[in-house]
Length: 123
Image 1 (tube, helix red, strand yellow):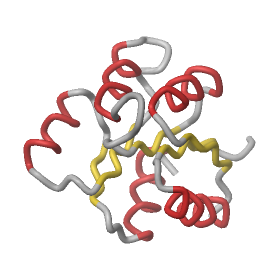
Image 2 (image 1 turned 30 degrees about the vertical axis):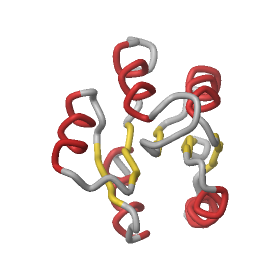
Image 3 (image 1 turned 90 degrees about the horizontal axis):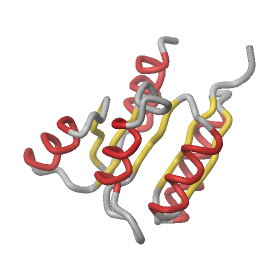
Image 4 (image 1 turned 120 degrees about the vertical axis):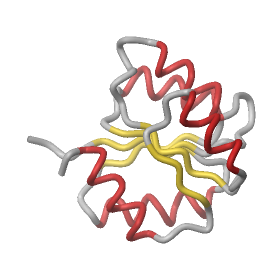
């Protein structure tokens, strides 16, 4: 069995680099995307095991991406972790209503992110 593939989507390159390094250190393969359209294209083309998805993205927001993927039977089983600075209860509820499997607020604790990933991937 190969490495689990994670699609990491955020428009902050420094944050992407930091999280990517942490995930690769924990033996995950990481694909990155920096805007909503790229994220949707890579999610559909690379079929990741899990998606870490920022909400506020250029071209298409994370809510729309989550909704489109969760409504499509080919991708609906991919766990999505909403990863955002938006900490309002209504933001979290909207994410859950669209099918997000977890909701983590930035700044984040890397150990919480890793444990949530392991939980969602059944590791």
